[in-house]
Length: 78
Image (cartoon, rainbow, N blue to C red; front, side, top):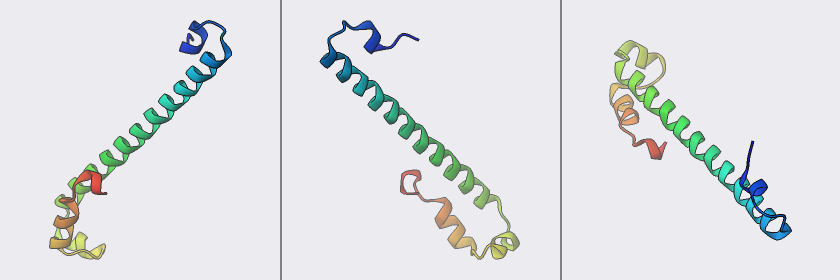
């Protein structure tokens, strides 16, 4: 695998800076994917809440109104 740090000259300060940037970019990508994964789960949960009948909602201790409020939450507020 060719990385940016391997493509640069052997200047230690430049190489260490680029390695740090690569590491930060990878960490950022992981964080973004984690948020998207959490939002996807929340979206799927809201769909399931909307489909539940009153008996199932009662079993989990929610009223229809509470379930609707939970399902209507914006994804980034979860």
